[in-house]
Image 1 (cartoon, rainbow, N blue to C red):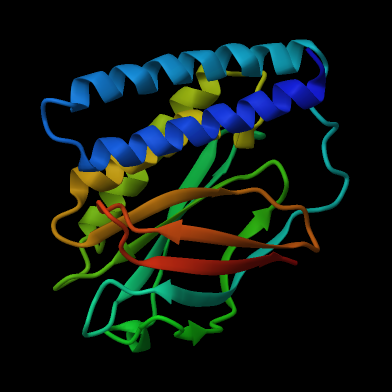
Image 2 (image 1 turned 90 degrees about the vertical axis):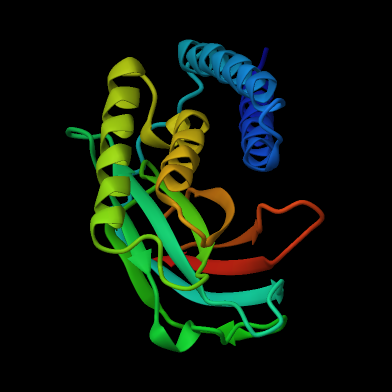
Length: 240
């Protein structure tokens, strides 16, 4: 199998895992064991394909470009599920594998966003999400819609940070040959589980992986985890 075919298979498995994780969040209790078993099966397949990808020499050489600053340039509400306006905020995991595993979960929020997002609403915050980010950094973006109060504040944000630091460290130890971004398939479900564990009543959206080279921009589309649709956002990031 060629490197291009292996890469396509990895991308397909990552998508399938993300879709199954989204399905798990809205499944009935009786359906969850079967979905969890499917997720485990896909993760094992992904582990095998990742190992083959490395063994075939498909891993690209490290980027010579120095790391930069990850910036949230723009956020647009494509579709709103709240009649009185949505109140979004972001939780962004940033993980570096070398020289030793380090990670954080950054919260992005501005007070003027409260109850102020409708279909077509656009803000251009130009907020720096993190520094020292490059093509070998694992970045996962979660969007949350506040209900009454932020579920992820203070000690609850710290709990998510600590949980993800543990999970990232374990994944790096178990897969020493893989780069941080190649751990996406394992870590997105763990990030989703951490958020679901500590979430009270805020609405959860899909988690998306972001991998960029310095000097580029990328747009993520994130949809709400509800049956039959819900809200949808476009997030524009730039790595400078």
